[in-house]
Length: 206
Image (cartoon, rainbow, N blue to C red; front, side, top):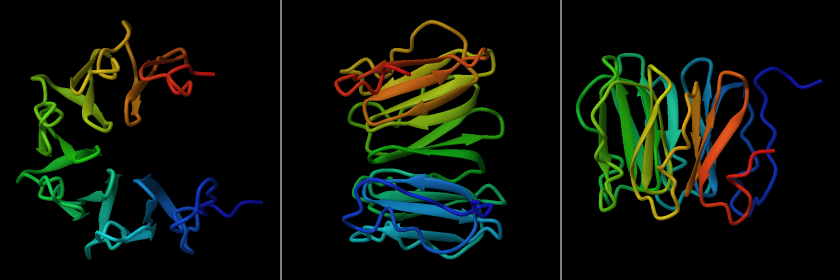
């Protein structure tokens, strides 16, 4: 029997990214070769690669975490954001404001505000940090793209689109998930639809 809140990991473990630290967790987020977990008391524990401080969380109590390639951002109870790890492109320097959800990509981060508006920071060469206007319910970020779910179930994306990762298939969705070069959406009937790179079958749901 698995203890509630315990973590089991599998896959490559060269840097200890699949060797979780003891404790009970309420949320997990994984970057490149590292993982961070949010505990019930709001503290954060990370394991794996830490060459740029991505596994050394800043002190504080958090309610939500989002990991990018080599950086992590945490949302605090008051809506403020604190980030740690790589900051070459400003992905760990959040814009001022109060947020309710975060999404971290390869080298950018986006935050969803209470009014549904979006603010992004970090690398923007492909436009991943330039959100399309609108009011959103959820954000997800891939390597160089970001997608937002609107109230009516429509999906709008921005950023890199070489593989069609931000060209959503028609339909209304209730939840989104993003990989480096692909995006998936969950429909109300439980069906999953994906778009983007599919060289390993990542955009072909089972």
